[in-house]
Image (cartoon, rainbow, N blue to C red):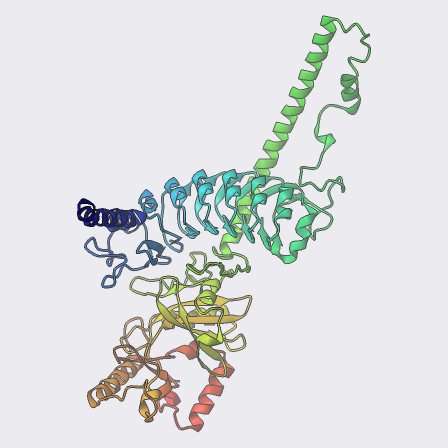
Length: 599
């Protein structure tokens, strides 16, 4: 009887233990909320940009919304995506209180301060994007402890000091981008120990010394950018296999007969990436060195006398001091000359566009978070302070941001036909899921249909981003690939498709709702409001004719609110494409009467 009565107590105890174990397997929800609140206070001191982050909310709950925060199946914060939000604070150590974090995306902001070393305590962090900010200080050596890290993007900041050798411990790292900082010292040979590395960008820094030969042994490396540094010595011949993926311009002391624009090395057999030997740099003549080396040859088997030994030691010491002094003077003059040249070069590079990351891409290898590589082209990035036209699309109140090609490709599964929503003669539209989980529609405009002139494209893009109305499809961002010649527009996704599918509902269309009279009237009013907004003249907005209104261009959201799509799109298209579209519209009787007077 006693054993039977103790059974319920035992079961109750086991339940308590299992519940305790389950709760200990994931961090307390309050701890993560506290971390997010500290993060908000540091990233957004004004409190205006992250207003959806509230202390009483639940970042992983169904009813609450924390902008840019994603959670995993265990209810932990797994990603923070706040790129291009205009954040002007700092990155706090509190981010390390999110142990389930796999992706931190804070690029394209105005963050200052240093990189917290506490980031090295995030065991699952796979992607760290802090590029295009104003971060300063050194790169923490603790980042070398991020065993899961695949992408480290710290480019376009004001980081100083040397590159930590500990980064060579990141065995899963595929992308290391440290370009356009103020890094000094030599390139660590330990970077050659990164077996998965595909892209290494160290351009536009103040690095000196030789190129480690181990870099040529990285099996997956496809892009290496070392431009605009003060590197010297022989270039490892193994880097020849990278072809155009190897960039080394503006390192005048590099040599290598196998590379275009490089002078031959004094010793063609020197192929280990070391500084070529220059005996003429020494002030000691070869005859003197030979005599110094032969000082002990006259000693018999019994040994040399003490005064003779002291004399030889003094000569050797004197020789070393003279050689070292001459070398130091030479290096000082050389370093000063190269620094002056580097300043001029950096200024020229800045005028060409702050964001000039090379056109090399990595594949999306993780299902939890898409890898982002930047295919920014010089002069095409309109959010750059160095843009030739000074266009900034991320103005206050505008949600538009400049996406990169890899992010768009990953969102649409590389423009898979499964995600194809529609197609025309000049463009195709795909459904996509962004990193923060939001659903978008990506319009891909083919190469021959985009405006080829940069000024015209940017002018049209500025006009598109100025259009904001509740009955227009909102433009979330854009991407322009100069290498591919294509342009991509990222719009809000309209869940209920186009109006045309509701105009002639068949009996067998079970998935299409028959619109009631009130909804139809509401849709008509919404369309009229959208057209009126386009035709009206407002501050910072000129009148605009849609030029191609049809039922297919009216999209319906989940609340059955109509949105006009394609407004202003012709401003980005080549003239012959616009003419062809208008000709077809005119043939069908759709050409607006206003076009004859306003265009």
